[in-house]
Image (cartoon, rainbow, N blue to C red):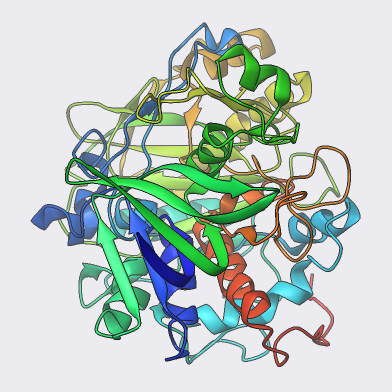
Length: 515
């Protein structure tokens, strides 16, 4: 049996931030538990190798339940199983998204959680030289910027988006997110910088920080509605870690609700159905699951487009309706994509489109009481009719960009959906046959005060003392950007809330956003 002040469960993006920040106090004894390994294969640091990391030992390799609205497909759901979590295996894009999707949190009942209150924590997380200091940070651990290298294909994609009607935006992480921008990425000196690299490596030598890898949390130790600690397995033995102050779940939108339910905290009827004792009937645990659905328009290229280097790439954020807030994103990759995110052979490129604010919701549930058993993941893709309508608008926008004059030197012909797919029915059928995850699950332990909320605005689990959650699961709704940036800010704010730090908790005053 071990005793600490704080036990952090999960060494992904959020866990690295929280453990590093809490352990800055030399009097605070901090334990960080990570089920995966400390590091991965050599290619984990190669920015060009991220598509090959899924299905390796650094991936949880989850699968969804069959999705009725996507032709009953079972979707692969990669999630990082290594220090740094998904920041160690993702596409390294750091895009916050439009402020409206953060303001929606407070409007839905997450008091005090909006874009302006999170902005200081976005800034605290990053080192982004040359940006507007009202919005960009320069002292944070994550070094982010567009790649210094250029490539003719990506320059043509940038210009094609402008030709399609989406004006250039010098910094989508500043005053305005909409338009055509170069991606900020967490790549430093040609290598990936994960949250573990940025936060944990500098802190790892602290005497008050204990990091245990290969440590799978099995259950929370809850006594009289108080979380006392965590039981975990490592090297074939069970270990109990007690927390004198707080246990902080940072296991992500899949792992955090799974551990709560394994510990008897969740929907009572479901827990009894799988043979678990019910410590607290908290119905929102595992509900409200959201992901960004994505698909693509794929082109055969007239020349080789795989340069073997990580050049800067553009993205586009646009509305699906005239006058609406941005809710569609377009990005580009240097290989032809077959349905369900399968890289195809030959020279080609793909224009990917994704719905950033889907209405569809799903669930995470236990398959049984065994903590080593994979959970049941049902994202509910396209279960709301409006999502398929918006995705079809996104498909037309991606096609418009892909067929713009700037891409003529690279464009041989459209592979998918192909020239015969023109009608709304054909495009809807194509979306259903090709939609896949954007690797952005959130929402399964949402902030709020309504009956389906799991944590309060201080990130404390309703009904359980000394237990908090600080990861993507607390988002009341998904943001209109790549979620790793939002998770960094949530975790930075969580550390501030836990320590009672006063300086960054006041609402800042921002200049008016430009159009």
